[in-house]
Image (tube, rainbow, N blue to C red; front, side):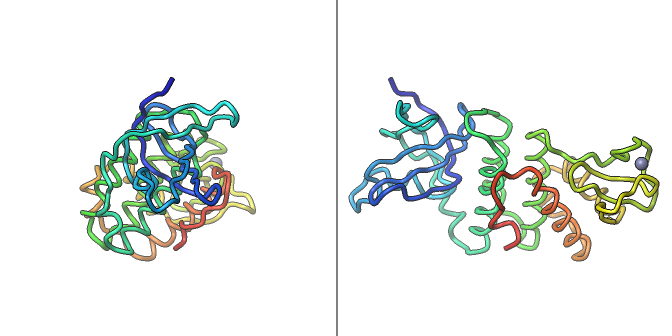
Length: 242
Ligand SMILES: [Zn+2]
């Protein structure tokens, strides 16, 4: 018995001399690990299915020997997404996006919204203003962690639930903190950081690609977001700070 699923390549590793294991985010099954047998041979037909960001329709057989692993027996490439490999910068941001999805998701928890958000950001990235790659990436991160149920609380203090004044802090596990509830581990953030992150949820992709943020503010958001993400990734993020 085989099944057909639509998926996007998140990550690939060599499994043995000729075989690869590829992580896909799929519409039907969420994240899955798929074994491609003999794909490292020069004549392998399925090699094109294993390139990062490739979107494919996969014909899968579930393996009995390994938990939650599938073997690809055929299928077709829906979109090679070659445009994402045409410039080093676009490719770098592609890798950053794919790593976020890979490291923040568990296997076999499907979520249509996550699949379509990933598909959409990969469509928008190559046509986005070059200066806005970071902004597009961060907006994606916030939308994605919201779907994961990990979004930080930004509108009120996470400890006393009061509205936040001009002076605000950030608890790196949960969200903003008022000056009255501040503890030693909280970091000071600017009011604009919270306002900007809240905008990421409201703007559509085209607006995000034109959205202007001052460099200093952007750096603060990048830093806070990186520290915040550490609580939710199951392995270190390798591409975030590149
Ligand atoms: Zn408080």
